[in-house]
Length: 630
Image (cartoon, rainbow, N blue to C red; front, side, top):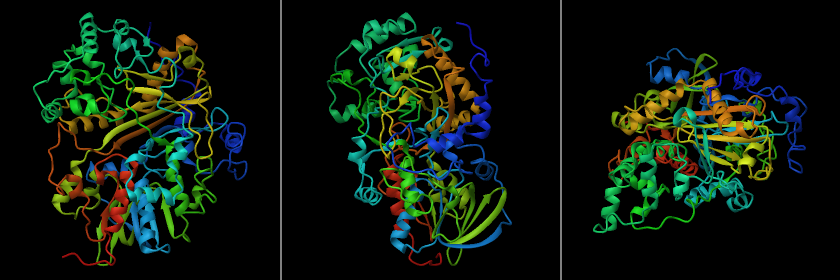
């Protein structure tokens, strides 16, 4: 197969310019006016007039997530040591200013009102053009009716909720059981030939789709014979998947756990699975979505605990099915939870919103930052300085190219940890060191709106793993009917195809933090056109033989790029066992006078419920009155 040119892949089509520059369909006005119509019959909600809102970022496509304009000021501060002096005082004073309008920041506003009263004056500042942080809402209208997809934070791990989080969800009307009853989606494992693996020509010398093939499942010799690696590699895979034994009969459970925690998963596959190097390569990016890291960052214990193959070498049987992960989801991920939070804090933004209509409700962004409101949310505002004063805090921020400052009684920093020492250099040195210990994990969700699923249906697949490509996996996103939105599992399109993963780090990045920083740098260097070329190339090779036309059947592309994605979690190979109270995240989140710290980093765990728990803790630690530092 000859490599196709950009023109043959459709790179020169208007979709590129339209999505990247304007971020919406040329038919957006009509689509918004009818989004509660034929595509979603019988749903609740309303559209205020026939004109598209002047400012409505969920419809923007192209490069999203940490989009251009959201991070440059922060990079100038943290990477280049830029000074932001001589700010213009706006004269604004609040009871609390919260840095970050993601889940933790919005939850902090909720808990602040709960503790200090509904009349508290609250301002949230966020550097992005939309609220929600990683819970980014992605709307598509290019196919007619509205199609929702995942922009970042996916779901609710409801079985891990604390009492605090359960109360929070109850107060926002979230019924997890009801949500789960309206879900058919299961990360693309419903089609008869899913999951599947696709091997690309540029990596493996041939374009080849293997249906019912997943490394987590027990592969047959017939399937392995079709994997395009060396004869020795295939033989090692047959031996690995065919064995059933206990390699460590003389060791007790604790000793086995210690052994597995001290060896990387690829080294486990090499040493104990006896796989060749080209066979081990197949496993490298399989953890990109769930963990955000290459498998060489995982211990064997961590990989096996999350369902990677190998327990059959420990005297355990092969699992009959894949890892069960019974999440609850909205059709835009946890963006609907964010919308419920915003609607509760700022009723004028979306009157009448309930959990039953939140996915379809109109949000008036013009009402986010009005001077007569008790709670205000200011987007496109990057905080660059936080200082304590005798009466509270002052904050400097950049908005629209202008440097401004304001004051507050309290400050809550609900932004990621590693930037906080640059925002607040007067923090104790030990605390700044602890804050910078946690290097966030890059993440990508690239949504491709395809005209229909005909080619996928011919192949009988709805999820594919790509061992040789940028994105480790893709899946069809449909079958979630919560929040008033309806999208059946049988909907043939338009539908979003989600490419999920991270970026492989440089080969010479040895320790975990070097790997994460290397992945982040590579991610930031990729343009929207790089991502577009990648998905077009993959879809042309995967689906082109079944009639999919990358020139005509790709309606829109949204790249949710999160260089600072998942929170850093302590890992077997890289982090010691810290004494209670002395782990970096525990030192990092210590209150500093009138300033406290929230976000999932403060819980060292990348989950929505952790972000909420940490917001509660941060607000509970605020002093009742500002006391001078001693």
